[in-house]
Amino acid sequence: MADLEKVRVWAEALIRLHLDDSWTFGFDRAAKRAGLTNYTHRRITVSKHLAARWDDDEVHQVLLHEVAHAMAGPAAGHGPVWRRTARELGYVGGRTHRGEIAAERAGWVGSCPGGHEHVRFRAPRGRYACTPCTRAARRVVEVRWMRRQAAA
Image 1 (tube, one colour):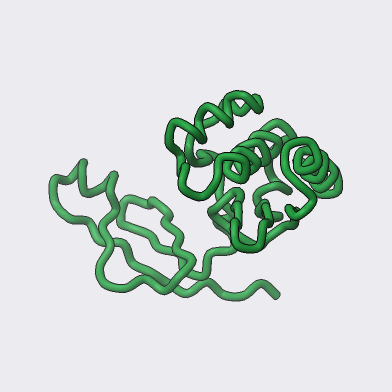
Image 2: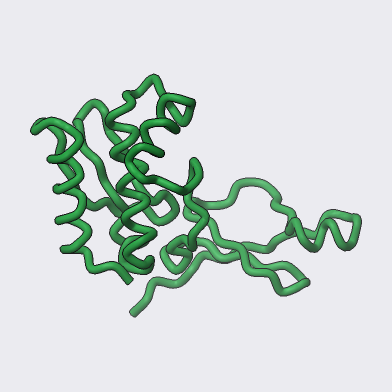
């Protein structure tokens, strides 16, 4: 688990090294997204929930990913300019993180007859199928949703 104060120090050092003084760093409350580069406010943020559960190397890679976005500019997306910039910074990951999400923060929990757990951060609309069960049964196996009770 990464220490959030260390993450702040790393982020601010990377910003000083590669960007100008107009860029800032902060933590956000995202539960699924690891980091964000906001070009309008010239601010890089990292999810405090995910940073607290990942190791230092994973969080450092998120920071490199976001700094590469800031350097490459908003039009670059995850295209060749961004990939080259990210690689030059030492980034070795993909376009999106594959780590765990803060599932305990999800407001909705679903289950299927096969025992698979599903989470949603917004109220489910319509019917949802459990992908593993539907594939195995070769018919739609529906997920049943319940609102998660707030922790006491």
